[in-house]
Length: 387
Image 1: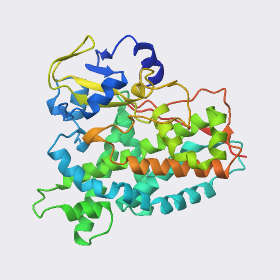
Image 2 (image 1 turned 30 degrees about the vertical axis):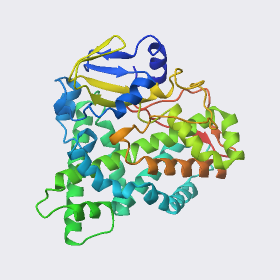
Image 3 (image 1 turned 180 degrees about the vertical axis):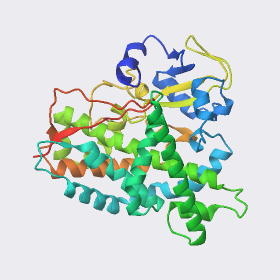
């Protein structure tokens, strides 16, 4: 229910309860900004599922070769420090011209003679996968495979997959890991100046600093985080603009608002609805009895619209000052790719609404359709008229 309508469910319960308990998954959904923000920074909370009580969510994570997303220090710090060099603010700012070039080429390829265009498949999806593939050092001829693998990674979070879908997702995982293992071997023999090459260069001879398995998992995380979530941010943000024509007009009249607009998009409808942590002690959260080892699902989208923290939280305002959001997390698990996601979204949306100033929803009466990927919130499609 929360995944289908995170804002509605949060609004219905946040005023009366600090958290909701999910009996099936044996986890607490934390709703209020004050608690979510504090828990994101709390160094005593854990991420490694090995520290969690047994349950469906724990078992699902333990069954996977989890990446640094579900690691605690010192392993988390060790791997993050190696990967983060490619995602500093300076490094990502330097990539703006290249991202603009990619965006322009994608927009050039859109067929504007059709009655409507799906912005998800025509822009929001191809831009991030092209950018992250270049950063990783992927051969452009392999982009279609990378897109397929990334989409299947997103599906792996869906507990309702049928047998055929689960088999396809598992096969994609094997293909992807074999591909990256081959890329690692190729760069070991012939060094490349790309992210995979950098990970290989960082390895000690005996692999103690970064094993091949850890490098593959790091690339898997970057592929998924650098593609699916940015796709959803671009599409969700554009939908908010189109549903609020006064805000679209304001942005078109004053393009310099784009940076603040993207922060408001992150607050208003983030692509990641829930973060997670593991309680390490028993404690009470405003009457909710949290037990050590229980999962805490931190409602990022709920915190972003908490009226106790934000003025008129359900109003989309690209000139909101200041915009405060927790959509990228906080503390030591702050999203590594946040600077890149911001830049891609700024360029994608500003370029789109500038080139097509008459852009509008193809049918405003049709309710948006969202993918069912627990913890995430992204559109299936977004059909617009460009001319």
